[in-house]
Length: 298
Image (cartoon, rainbow, N blue to C red):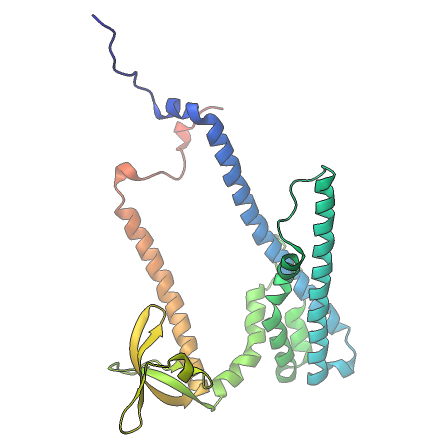
């Protein structure tokens, strides 16, 4: 009787041994990604601490004359520009040093960015704090010099090198100086109201550009009421009428909508993830970890 042509049944692990080299290479790449992601989080935390530290030090040592609103703005503007310039200088030094080390065979391939790209990327960290600097400038005349310094005092960091209180909490306090005038503004601005909706949300329009932006979509009734159709909100195409409303009222409704959307989105994301998991067949589900009793001995 001839030898059976049926292949010998092997286990998944036996099959995977044929790909051990590729698995090791892929794992190394994914490991690098995981570590770099964590390094990015750590770097961002260090960047925030560095920003708070330098701003607090500069303000704490500022002469009384520089604490006045106009002078304070000039001081913070100068600080912002000096940090940007220092970032550019340091980035260029590192770029040139890495290029030289690569040419001498002492380092891996250097940055792919040229001088202009390096200069732009180098200031991303400080540019992310531009609004915070503006809020500091607004906070002092409203809440006082000492309370502002107290918010910016880096103090003792937590076990992971983060600010305590967190930067988010500090930003929330600084933002109060801008929140009040935004909500109190009575300036009338053009807004769009969706037709056929009870208590429609006021979509703020740019008073200088909205007609040009929606050119070809604007019609006017005999009574003078203007319509925009279609009015694009993301992927939505709405039919709206144009009116006016106080800027503060529009701003407040916008903030409420932002928070509601954030809360609803988080809930929906959690519910959808659970539904997707529940509807994944058991024989297709991949366990998170090997049970302790099934772990292979090393």
